Image (cartoon, rainbow, N blue to C red; front, side):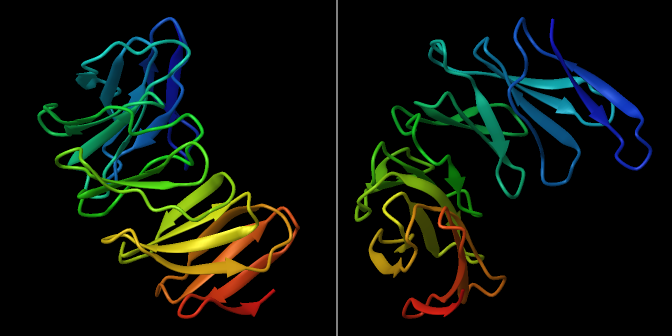
Length: 231
């Protein structure tokens, strides 16, 4: 049996051992308040643990079999009220307090996706399809709301602005793009890198974006007009 250990970072003391199944736990994520930990396993279960005692406080079972080699990954919403889980193909949302399954989104995830983003109000789930399109789902109903496209290469990274109104994506097509989360409409294209743009982020006020590329250059942009400010 495999275990995941929780440690006190100030003292180096081991706090708890979280047992897995017959395979290692692949991802361990804390709740926003640090009181709970969620883990995904290969046995169709997502477990919620007390971060201090190491006791399992909830077990979330997926409604459909998880086919190998898919693993379950999970994380908390920003307010800690929901848990999002995926096997790289389907996505589920549970009530973090009761363990009740809230939403099932079949085929919402893709193994080549940059990952999953959940808006702060837990209303919009964002992922990417294989290739170059973004997918915006209503997280409460599971309905695909928009599928904006524009990139000419695989999307490598995604990030929401501080107010969650704008989505930043970076791509192998050497560009970054900005999207309106509510409508799915394209807002701007940030062009200038000479290789794949591997990551990016917003400034705290949401007015600027920094992008990092495999051309070994980081660029800062004014997102109102896509003006390149610094290199």
